[in-house]
View 1 (tube, rainbow, N blue to C red):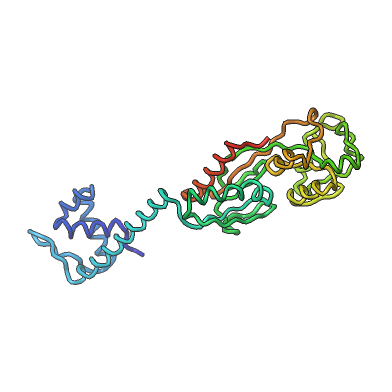
View 2 (cartoon, rainbow, N blue to C red):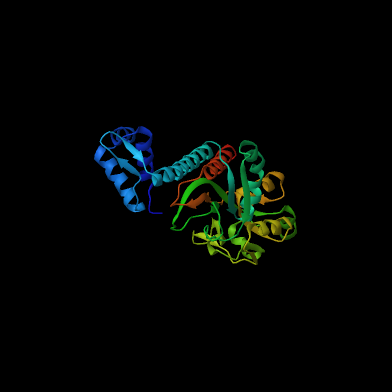
Length: 299
């Protein structure tokens, strides 16, 4: 489209006020600027819209026809802007959320009922991916990521932190014995991650004082799978509080080496597009999660 909104506004203002001078005052422009804008519009359309006399301006037949379209376009833009303003005040529309399965199940799903009660017009679409996804490719509005973030074109907002601990079921410990120190782990079945390798760094010190890097006896890409393996008495695991807090409170999993455990916390971040204005439905959801985690922090 060659014609601009400024040109349409100038044309309609001149018609409505009856003069370029009055239109200039209405638009907050100089008389010469308004005159040039009107002339530029007629040049683009290659037609005369207004006949200029010494006393007044009159619409040509083409001008009268174009005026109908100009008014319709400006009204449509006003309606769109009003709708966007309403959406900012009352979030509406589809919100696509991505998170690893454990965070989705243990953190986000329990919050959905409360969020829906507060924001009934936001249509949630919840997806789980264990790895890092491309938000554009997956058509995702906001993703929750656990751990340190790499450099990205995305904007990241801190949501909270979650401590990691070494855990086992009482039945496993009864069957295989309870390791007294981290060095005793070598004689046990260790449940770890296939990737990334950093998740196999446990928050206890090895013989030389570094964080213990374990070699898993059994491994999975999913923390939720490892949690269920530990609950099934299959081995010792290191997982984040956000997914095991209930298990520890109920006694289904117990922490090992409480005196030897370092206070290592995984950052939790919400990430979304950096180069677009943040939609109110994204803001209200992230704000809701932040408030909820602030009231019931992990670890």
